Image 1 (cartoon, rainbow, N blue to C red):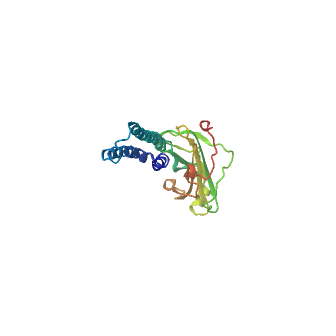
Image 2 (cartoon, one colour):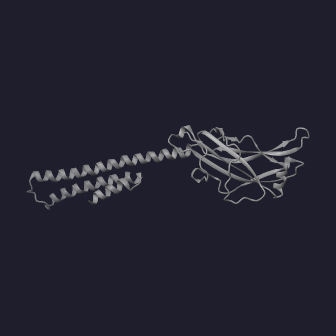
Image 3 (tube, helix red, strand yellow):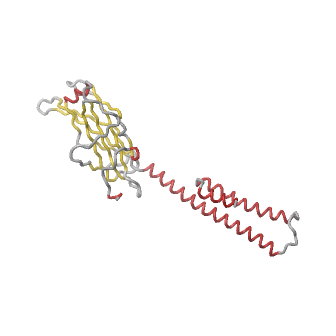
Length: 266
Protein backbone atom coordinates (compact mmCIF):
# COMPACT_ATOMS: atom_id res chain seq x y z
CA UNK A 1 0.00 0.00 0.00
CA UNK A 2 2.82 2.39 0.74
CA UNK A 3 4.48 1.89 -2.64
CA UNK A 4 1.22 2.08 -4.61
CA UNK A 5 0.38 5.35 -2.87
CA UNK A 6 3.72 6.78 -4.00
CA UNK A 7 3.10 5.62 -7.55
CA UNK A 8 -0.28 7.38 -7.66
CA UNK A 9 1.32 10.60 -6.48
CA UNK A 10 4.09 10.24 -9.00
CA UNK A 11 1.67 9.79 -11.91
CA UNK A 12 -0.88 12.50 -11.20
CA UNK A 13 0.60 14.98 -8.78
CA UNK A 14 4.08 15.74 -10.06
CA UNK A 15 5.56 17.80 -12.82
CA UNK A 16 7.04 15.99 -15.85
CA UNK A 17 10.55 16.84 -14.68
CA UNK A 18 10.10 15.34 -11.21
CA UNK A 19 8.44 12.28 -12.73
CA UNK A 20 11.52 11.41 -14.77
CA UNK A 21 13.81 11.57 -11.74
CA UNK A 22 11.53 9.42 -9.53
CA UNK A 23 11.67 6.38 -11.84
CA UNK A 24 15.19 5.31 -10.79
CA UNK A 25 14.11 5.66 -7.15
CA UNK A 26 11.27 3.18 -7.64
CA UNK A 27 13.50 0.67 -9.42
CA UNK A 28 16.16 1.01 -6.74
CA UNK A 29 13.55 0.25 -4.08
CA UNK A 30 12.67 -3.03 -5.78
CA UNK A 31 16.34 -4.03 -6.12
CA UNK A 32 16.87 -3.20 -2.43
CA UNK A 33 13.96 -5.47 -1.54
CA UNK A 34 15.52 -8.36 -3.47
CA UNK A 35 18.93 -7.77 -1.85
CA UNK A 36 17.35 -7.93 1.59
CA UNK A 37 15.83 -11.29 0.66
CA UNK A 38 19.21 -12.67 -0.47
CA UNK A 39 20.97 -11.30 2.62
CA UNK A 40 18.39 -12.94 4.87
CA UNK A 41 19.08 -16.35 3.34
CA UNK A 42 22.85 -15.83 3.55
CA UNK A 43 22.73 -14.95 7.27
CA UNK A 44 20.35 -17.74 8.20
CA UNK A 45 17.48 -15.45 9.04
CA UNK A 46 15.38 -17.60 6.75
CA UNK A 47 15.44 -21.35 7.02
CA UNK A 48 17.61 -23.07 4.37
CA UNK A 49 15.19 -26.02 4.57
CA UNK A 50 12.47 -24.20 2.77
CA UNK A 51 11.57 -25.99 -0.40
CA UNK A 52 12.47 -24.85 -3.87
CA UNK A 53 8.80 -24.22 -4.57
CA UNK A 54 8.58 -21.69 -1.74
CA UNK A 55 11.68 -19.85 -2.94
CA UNK A 56 10.32 -19.75 -6.47
CA UNK A 57 7.07 -18.38 -5.07
CA UNK A 58 8.96 -15.63 -3.20
CA UNK A 59 10.93 -14.62 -6.28
CA UNK A 60 7.80 -14.77 -8.45
CA UNK A 61 6.07 -12.43 -6.02
CA UNK A 62 9.04 -10.06 -6.08
CA UNK A 63 9.16 -10.19 -9.87
CA UNK A 64 5.43 -9.46 -10.09
CA UNK A 65 5.89 -6.49 -7.79
CA UNK A 66 8.85 -5.24 -9.81
CA UNK A 67 6.88 -5.61 -13.07
CA UNK A 68 3.96 -3.62 -11.65
CA UNK A 69 6.28 -0.81 -10.50
CA UNK A 70 8.03 -0.78 -13.88
CA UNK A 71 4.69 -0.61 -15.70
CA UNK A 72 3.59 2.32 -13.54
CA UNK A 73 6.92 4.04 -14.17
CA UNK A 74 6.53 3.52 -17.92
CA UNK A 75 3.06 5.05 -17.88
CA UNK A 76 4.43 7.95 -15.87
CA UNK A 77 7.24 8.50 -18.34
CA UNK A 78 4.83 8.48 -21.28
CA UNK A 79 2.60 11.00 -19.52
CA UNK A 80 5.57 13.18 -18.62
CA UNK A 81 6.81 13.10 -22.21
CA UNK A 82 3.36 14.09 -23.47
CA UNK A 83 3.13 16.98 -21.01
CA UNK A 84 6.58 18.23 -21.97
CA UNK A 85 5.56 18.14 -25.63
CA UNK A 86 2.37 20.08 -24.96
CA UNK A 87 4.25 22.65 -22.90
CA UNK A 88 6.92 23.06 -25.59
CA UNK A 89 4.26 23.49 -28.28
CA UNK A 90 2.50 26.18 -26.25
CA UNK A 91 5.78 27.99 -25.65
CA UNK A 92 6.54 27.98 -29.38
CA UNK A 93 3.09 29.37 -30.17
CA UNK A 94 3.43 32.11 -27.55
CA UNK A 95 6.82 33.16 -28.95
CA UNK A 96 6.02 32.85 -32.65
CA UNK A 97 2.38 33.94 -32.97
CA UNK A 98 1.29 37.30 -34.33
CA UNK A 99 0.79 39.98 -31.65
CA UNK A 100 -0.90 43.23 -32.67
CA UNK A 101 -0.72 46.53 -30.77
CA UNK A 102 -0.81 50.28 -31.49
CA UNK A 103 2.73 51.65 -31.61
CA UNK A 104 1.73 55.32 -32.00
CA UNK A 105 -0.13 57.83 -34.16
CA UNK A 106 0.62 60.28 -36.95
CA UNK A 107 -0.99 63.70 -37.37
CA UNK A 108 -0.92 65.24 -40.84
CA UNK A 109 -1.82 68.84 -41.62
CA UNK A 110 -4.46 69.34 -44.30
CA UNK A 111 -4.00 72.42 -46.45
CA UNK A 112 -6.57 74.43 -48.34
CA UNK A 113 -5.99 73.95 -52.06
CA UNK A 114 -6.55 77.64 -52.85
CA UNK A 115 -4.92 79.45 -49.92
CA UNK A 116 -2.38 76.82 -48.93
CA UNK A 117 -3.42 77.49 -45.34
CA UNK A 118 -3.94 74.87 -42.68
CA UNK A 119 -7.60 73.85 -42.54
CA UNK A 120 -7.49 70.84 -40.28
CA UNK A 121 -5.70 67.70 -39.18
CA UNK A 122 -5.88 64.04 -40.02
CA UNK A 123 -4.74 61.33 -37.59
CA UNK A 124 -3.84 57.70 -38.26
CA UNK A 125 -2.67 55.10 -35.79
CA UNK A 126 0.03 52.54 -36.50
CA UNK A 127 -0.87 48.88 -35.98
CA UNK A 128 2.29 46.86 -35.29
CA UNK A 129 2.82 43.09 -35.46
CA UNK A 130 5.66 42.22 -33.08
CA UNK A 131 5.29 38.47 -33.67
CA UNK A 132 7.26 36.19 -35.98
CA UNK A 133 4.27 35.03 -38.01
CA UNK A 134 1.65 36.95 -40.04
CA UNK A 135 -1.92 37.72 -39.08
CA UNK A 136 -4.94 36.04 -40.62
CA UNK A 137 -8.38 37.61 -41.06
CA UNK A 138 -7.36 40.89 -39.43
CA UNK A 139 -10.12 43.45 -38.81
CA UNK A 140 -9.46 46.88 -37.27
CA UNK A 141 -11.60 49.75 -36.07
CA UNK A 142 -10.40 53.26 -35.12
CA UNK A 143 -12.55 56.18 -34.02
CA UNK A 144 -12.00 59.78 -32.86
CA UNK A 145 -14.08 61.41 -30.13
CA UNK A 146 -14.14 65.15 -29.31
CA UNK A 147 -15.96 66.02 -26.06
CA UNK A 148 -16.37 69.12 -23.91
CA UNK A 149 -15.61 67.44 -20.59
CA UNK A 150 -12.97 64.85 -19.63
CA UNK A 151 -14.35 61.33 -19.71
CA UNK A 152 -14.36 59.04 -16.72
CA UNK A 153 -11.72 56.32 -16.82
CA UNK A 154 -14.46 53.66 -16.85
CA UNK A 155 -16.17 55.16 -19.90
CA UNK A 156 -17.02 52.64 -22.61
CA UNK A 157 -17.01 53.88 -26.20
CA UNK A 158 -19.51 52.75 -28.82
CA UNK A 159 -18.88 52.40 -32.56
CA UNK A 160 -20.65 55.20 -34.44
CA UNK A 161 -22.14 55.08 -37.91
CA UNK A 162 -22.42 52.03 -40.12
CA UNK A 163 -20.23 49.38 -38.58
CA UNK A 164 -17.69 48.13 -41.13
CA UNK A 165 -14.33 47.16 -39.71
CA UNK A 166 -11.36 47.46 -42.05
CA UNK A 167 -9.98 44.10 -43.16
CA UNK A 168 -6.24 43.92 -43.65
CA UNK A 169 -3.03 41.92 -43.12
CA UNK A 170 0.23 42.57 -41.25
CA UNK A 171 3.44 40.68 -41.98
CA UNK A 172 5.83 39.67 -39.17
CA UNK A 173 7.68 42.65 -37.70
CA UNK A 174 5.72 45.09 -39.89
CA UNK A 175 3.06 47.75 -39.37
CA UNK A 176 0.18 49.38 -41.20
CA UNK A 177 -1.57 52.73 -40.73
CA UNK A 178 -5.29 53.04 -40.18
CA UNK A 179 -7.08 54.42 -43.21
CA UNK A 180 -8.69 56.79 -43.96
CA UNK A 181 -7.26 59.37 -41.51
CA UNK A 182 -9.65 60.64 -38.85
CA UNK A 183 -10.48 64.35 -39.17
CA UNK A 184 -9.97 67.06 -36.56
CA UNK A 185 -11.10 70.60 -37.40
CA UNK A 186 -9.07 73.73 -36.63
CA UNK A 187 -11.77 74.85 -34.18
CA UNK A 188 -11.56 71.61 -32.21
CA UNK A 189 -7.77 71.69 -32.37
CA UNK A 190 -7.63 75.23 -30.93
CA UNK A 191 -10.07 74.22 -28.19
CA UNK A 192 -7.97 71.13 -27.42
CA UNK A 193 -4.82 73.23 -27.00
CA UNK A 194 -6.67 75.53 -24.59
CA UNK A 195 -8.11 72.62 -22.60
CA UNK A 196 -11.69 73.46 -23.58
CA UNK A 197 -12.15 70.22 -25.49
CA UNK A 198 -10.73 66.76 -25.11
CA UNK A 199 -9.71 64.45 -27.95
CA UNK A 200 -9.70 60.66 -27.64
CA UNK A 201 -8.65 58.13 -30.26
CA UNK A 202 -9.69 54.57 -29.55
CA UNK A 203 -10.23 51.31 -31.36
CA UNK A 204 -9.51 47.60 -31.57
CA UNK A 205 -8.04 44.89 -33.75
CA UNK A 206 -9.24 41.29 -34.07
CA UNK A 207 -7.26 38.60 -35.85
CA UNK A 208 -6.25 34.94 -36.04
CA UNK A 209 -2.75 33.52 -35.77
CA UNK A 210 -1.35 30.82 -38.06
CA UNK A 211 -1.59 28.00 -35.50
CA UNK A 212 -4.43 25.49 -35.54
CA UNK A 213 -6.74 25.18 -32.55
CA UNK A 214 -6.08 28.66 -31.12
CA UNK A 215 -8.68 31.27 -30.27
CA UNK A 216 -9.27 34.50 -32.17
CA UNK A 217 -7.29 37.40 -30.67
CA UNK A 218 -8.37 40.94 -29.77
CA UNK A 219 -6.39 44.07 -28.89
CA UNK A 220 -7.96 47.28 -27.53
CA UNK A 221 -6.46 50.76 -27.17
CA UNK A 222 -7.55 54.23 -26.10
CA UNK A 223 -5.38 57.37 -26.23
CA UNK A 224 -6.03 60.90 -25.04
CA UNK A 225 -4.27 63.38 -27.31
CA UNK A 226 -2.87 66.83 -26.57
CA UNK A 227 -1.19 69.41 -28.76
CA UNK A 228 0.66 72.73 -28.80
CA UNK A 229 2.05 75.05 -31.44
CA UNK A 230 1.07 78.01 -33.66
CA UNK A 231 -1.45 77.71 -36.45
CA UNK A 232 0.69 79.99 -38.59
CA UNK A 233 3.52 77.46 -38.80
CA UNK A 234 2.22 73.93 -38.42
CA UNK A 235 5.76 72.54 -38.81
CA UNK A 236 6.26 73.62 -35.19
CA UNK A 237 3.10 71.92 -33.95
CA UNK A 238 3.54 68.90 -31.69
CA UNK A 239 1.11 66.17 -30.66
CA UNK A 240 1.47 63.70 -27.82
CA UNK A 241 -0.78 61.21 -26.13
CA UNK A 242 -1.23 59.16 -22.99
CA UNK A 243 -2.96 55.84 -22.39
CA UNK A 244 -6.51 56.41 -21.22
CA UNK A 245 -8.97 54.21 -19.34
CA UNK A 246 -9.11 50.47 -19.04
CA UNK A 247 -9.49 50.09 -22.80
CA UNK A 248 -5.86 49.11 -23.25
CA UNK A 249 -5.23 45.39 -23.28
CA UNK A 250 -5.05 42.18 -25.25
CA UNK A 251 -7.12 38.99 -25.33
CA UNK A 252 -8.42 38.18 -21.82
CA UNK A 253 -7.66 41.76 -20.66
CA UNK A 254 -10.07 43.28 -23.19
CA UNK A 255 -13.38 44.67 -21.94
CA UNK A 256 -15.25 44.42 -25.22
CA UNK A 257 -16.43 41.17 -26.82
CA UNK A 258 -15.31 39.97 -30.23
CA UNK A 259 -17.10 41.96 -32.95
CA UNK A 260 -15.90 39.96 -35.96
CA UNK A 261 -15.72 36.29 -36.84
CA UNK A 262 -13.34 34.11 -38.80
CA UNK A 263 -13.89 31.21 -41.20
CA UNK A 264 -10.88 29.56 -39.54
CA UNK A 265 -12.48 29.56 -36.09
CA UNK A 266 -16.05 28.48 -36.84
